[in-house]
Image 1 (cartoon, one colour):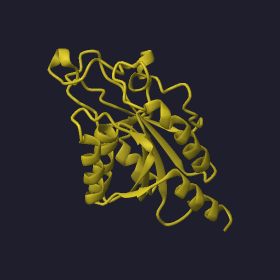
Image 2 (tube, rainbow, N blue to C red):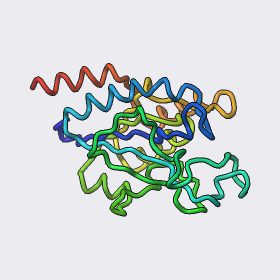
Image 3 (cartoon, rainbow, N blue to C red):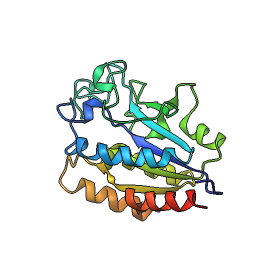
Length: 205
């Protein structure tokens, strides 16, 4: 979208350990991958930035149960579980943002992460003059929620792509509470179809 808004797309944590048979499976995670691919394909036609975040934990992260956290061991840096799902069709120029790399960090938010070049995600957005972020991925009530709320705190406009997310719902109602919290904080809900229509209109201009 070549507008003053300077948007970008953020795909959050679509990694093997969060998908079917993973160490920390998010219910229905695999079901949103075709929708994510539609979203990525449409967005790629604009030539705007696509970011993809990933958990990239050390083996002794305090995030894990055995070191005082609440989660089973998952997404250890360099392992199969930390790889992006093989069916996720990321473009070669997608910018990877790794988070949770310190053993003391939960790494829920993409804003805790760094690009492969060592830049903070926030600095990369600022350098690209990005003012709007479209967010999709896993999991609604954790990494998506934290990333959206942090984006709003920095002054970004945020659109949550509601048909391209899935949640853990560790405590029943967590997903609905997270969705409400994001909207109350200023996020706008959209769908892949609505975004495709917007992109088609821009391409016709």
